[in-house]
Image (tube, rainbow, N blue to C red; front, side):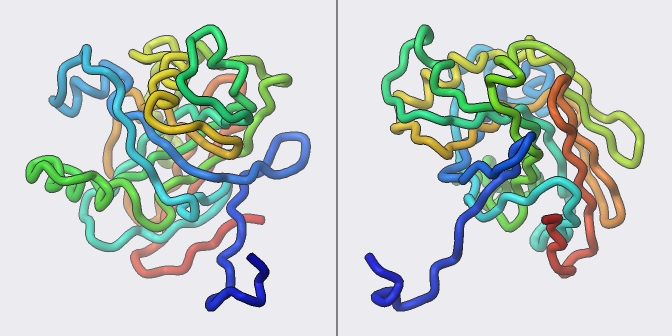
Length: 240
């Protein structure tokens, strides 16, 4: 379809910077719920042996390193979750564990920003989580590393600081479902495509942030992600 036939202007492409140059075009953002036992226990929810489940965030909710994001509306409990993100580079469906990692283009650090009060409300009413998980600017993502450069991220520290104080610390080895298993499970539900991002869950230590706070999220061996929290109603200031 040509642009001349569009009744509204196209909204443009969403991309994430790549370490060493270039940009990764984002197709979809999938998130794994409850993938660290420590986080399940702190949230006092779910069976620790439950299979993984997935939810999505809007593609245009991506913001990049160094950005200032406004404190969102409709919440008094705005929380961080540091996560390893998998970048998919190859189409796949009904994958086996033996072939799953061949579909990984690279890895990075991301934040699953959450309106926790709205998520709890939705869960109590047995409603979808979107109001708590899928809103403007809810998916900060750091620069991606090519797998050829960083290898597959199976272990290593995953941490988060707020205003210089460590709030989260875990290890990728503590994931209940590892990267291969996540890809296998998700590929049974949807066809994975180049440009998909998968956030893989968070360790314990989630808590609220406030305007003026600075978040630094890190995974050992990958480029850290820094995000500033602006006042409610302020504009997004996204770094180029």
